[in-house]
Length: 293
Image (cartoon, rainbow, N blue to C red; front, side, top):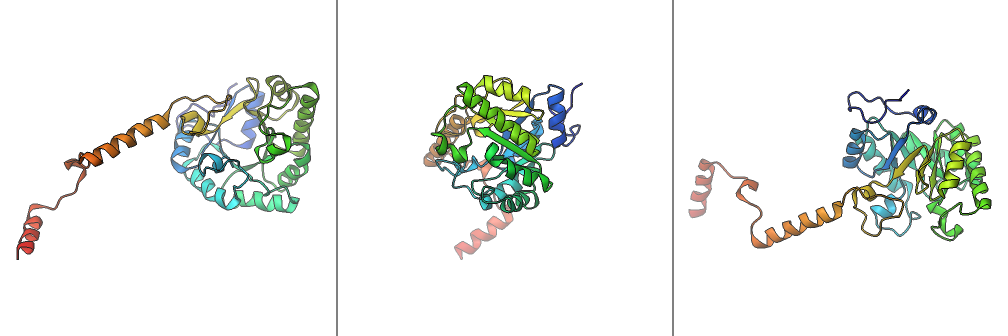
């Protein structure tokens, strides 16, 4: 049995739900997730049939130019969520809860998660952290808001773990990650993002828990994959993570187009006659007469 979520025409596709994630895992159907931070790219992602769009706090780095995700606020992300919602009608939409929007108290976590649903028009939220954040995930989930977990490299707290280092490189850390995943599963999450975890540990987690795993830099055996759309498109100029695959180089294409535009403006080649608006002959004659009088 195949759950018809991806690869069908826009008219044929049904709305992807949290429940579909579980069905896809049970039927060994890989889940396709991308990030999107605006209306135009969310239209494209939705039309090609991705199963889920994550409005990630990576927006702070990829779009705003911060060095980390830490500075991003709910107020910055909510308009981005709204824009993505306007472009996507089939994909499951997930809002990424930024740093300090859920860590302080369960009440804060529920309130802020609710803002992503009510104001941002998302259908679920993502919360970073393993066992230490399971109670927050449970509180939000118990409030009726679907939660996607996130373990491994958690960018909001990466500095506590020595920076962006591969997780699960030995048996002890691998066991801790499995326990983190189990804790989140017990807390009621509908899936877990595994970021930069060794393939062996990611495979073990995927086999151990009943909810889907979504890998980013965690190998071939997760139930699905997520990539930042700008990495896919070659639009993030700073670096390309090892785990990402650049499917095209739009940065070079855009650079070439802007270079050509600048050259044509300086040479007087743009705008051409086909790019301008003109008066009709009678009105032009009137204008000429007025200027001469």
